Structure formats: C-alpha cells, structure tokens
Picture 1 (cartoon, rainbow, N blue to C red):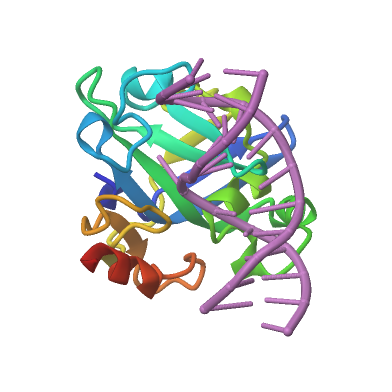
Picture 2 (cartoon, helix red, strand yellow):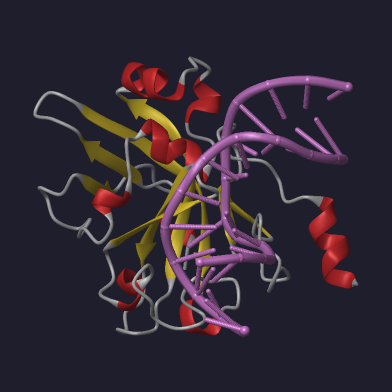
Length: 190
DNA sequence: CACCCGATTATCT
DNA sequence: GATAATCGGGTGT
C-alpha cells in the first residue's frame, strides 16, 4: 500500500559532501499483476523485471522521451510485482542543488511531480534495481514525520482502473502535484 | 521494421 | 485548457 510511505524521508546521496533529502508527500499504489494500470500487468519484460523481484528495491523507468519516475517495490511475495510510485516530495536538504537541476527556486515547484522529483534528486535509470533499505545505498528511505494526515483520490494520468482510489497525499502540504482531471472521471463513465 | 502511445512537463492561449 | 516535445518499450507484420 502507498499510505504508509507518506511522511517518510527520501534521502539521495550524491557524494560524501552532498546529500539531498525530502519528505514524501504524495504516492500511488500499483497492484502489479492484478492491476491493469501497472507496468507489470502484462507480465515480466526486460524493462519491468525489477518489479517482479524483492520488495525494497527501486524501479526507475523512463517515459515520454524526457522523464524518469521512481517506484519502490512493495510486494511481500516475489512475482506479485506491486509497487508505489513516488509522485511528490517536500524538499528538506540540498535545496540549492535541487534548484539548479530544476531551474527554479520556487520551493513548491521543485519536486511536486514524479518527473520533477527525479530531476531534482538526480535519479535516472542507472539506479534501477538498487536496494533502498541498505544504509550505504545512493537512495534510502527513513522515518520522517509521524502522524501525517493522509487523503486519497483516483490515480493521475492513467486510463484504466481509474476508479481505484490508490493515490495518497499529505492533506496539509502544498507540494503535492495536480489533482486528477475531471476528464478522467467522464472517461470512466462512458 | 513500422507503428502506436505512455504512471509527464513546460509553455502557450 | 490545450498541446508540442521526445524516445524507447511493446506489439504485430
């Protein structure tokens, strides 16, 4: 599930001197082999192989010819291929470095989207498959803010299984990405 | 090999 | 709100 990751801290180690971090404020759950919206729904391929492996590993994919997206494999069971897509982060440490990568100094615009946060945190396909539970991993997740109020909605940018409310976000945080479009709701009804 | 299209973003009207 | 940008994955011939 994606609810549990809201409020946790994402840490990206670049060098001994440079560490980026932020609080995860928005995520979406993808149900692997049982979810038509998941990359894993049609089975294992070279691109999505990581999803079919152990929980706690990063699945990073490239899309729209321009953007990387970061997921964490969540399945307790090998082959189930469920994961959470990290959609938005509130920057905490290394904000100046992030601002350079993102070409904006507006705090709420630096990492409020799945493609934006990978750019801000300098995450690309070379990090696909790494174990984020290890202390020396270039990407880690640690406990962040406890007792965050979490809201839910439909997932964004998908055309199937749109009725599932598997998007989770911090209810009182300005760094979340856009709301689901009305168009998707209409599409669902037709 | 040709074709389609996507878990997006920036920019324009 | 609408759309171009941009490219590689997946599918079918």
